[in-house]
Amino acid sequence: MYDRRGLPIFDDIAAVDSNLGRQTALTGRYRGTMRAATRDLRGMINRGEMSAGRFTPAQLRAIRGGRAQTPGYTWHHHQNIGRMQLVPREAAQRSQSRGWVGALSPLVGQGSSR
Image (cartoon, rainbow, N blue to C red):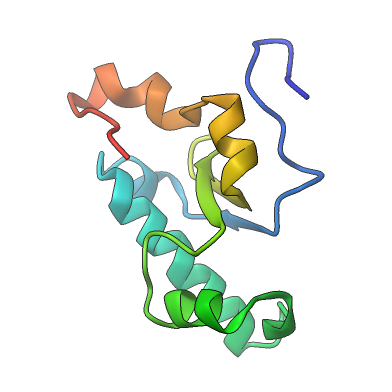
């Protein structure tokens, strides 16, 4: 499903929604924002806001390690700046979207290589 601008909507399949805030989002560091979102997810699990049972042992190791990537998932840079969604990797690859990173790349002078 896509919005009227042609950007993907992952709300129904996102495992997690994280809001990094504009300051973190606008650093221009693609993988850095993904690591920040993973740290936010780790905090949700530690505070009991998210069940660790939703994730496999390998995924939990990546989350606890603050990694940019979680096996089977990827962080989608939602079109709303700072909003990150943990979505199945296959769905993100099919959409070929770069979210707000794609829109901001010319502005921050950074590429958005994955």
